[in-house]
Image 1 (cartoon, rainbow, N blue to C red):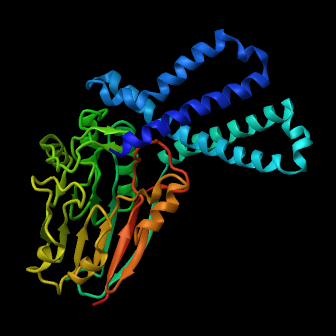
Image 2: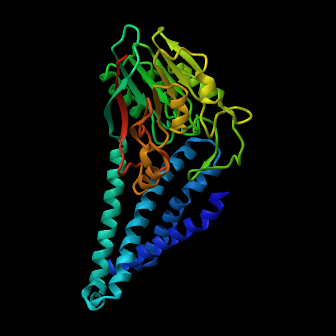
Image 3: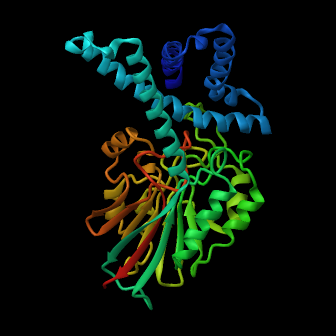
Length: 396
């Protein structure tokens, strides 16, 4: 429903950006004001602008996948173009009330110069964002647990999350990720949800992705939980239309993850090699159960031996105090993307107690990764795509 209110604003922004673009072009060269240029350009521009809507209504096909991929780039381009234009419009209005109003700033040459600067800024940010999103980095953390772990002084954990496999992230990015994981020589790999991007059919090479995941070298294996996007659900410009429903987990997705060698924990715990516990929680927003419920964290830990280290995997870094009170030593999460795109980074860091990184909570440590993939625009600005290499030291 929110989307219906935002749609007029989106269309207004699209039209305004087109008007301002033509205003700049006609000052650059009068030929850009000719109909034989403006009409085909407008047709292409409107088609790209409507690509998010078109992708939503098109039946599943190769063409629909292409349109959806175009729309993911377009949303980022529109966002940063609008920000750049907005900043310079504000500065122009301020300048009109100063002595600058009678300068060349408001001449034809000034319009050309300012428009060129605005365009260059938007292009540079978008290009940087696209390149940055593909560059997977390794973030190292050290965490101490005040317990003994039988036969272990240290545990090397690699945390990944938010792959969003589908329209933007495919087998090549997974290959790069697996190479990074294996370089860390992990004892265990944890996948904290959002493996998919709300669609199985959008995977570019399902078998190839499975083969890449099977290359992961880990002493204790790969464990994880599902996130709010690990369900088949129609998405329109980031909004879902389930209206309070709790879509069931896709059996196709579950089978695919299993074939990848990832052991998913659905509100359950497992004792690894009689040394430490992994507790996997269902997602808070989309648990994949018929009634939309998930178990309380206290229920999942009440019958386990808390003298052993207890590691919780929860897609969203919520209920940190409750998780600490339930006896967890480390809570592994993702979901936030650390905001992914500035200035959304500011909002995310204001919402979440731990938006990204390491945070102590009583005797528990919360570790949140910004994720490997992207949601929506295939860009990262002010954040990074990462895997986390966590050295856990036992000091019992």
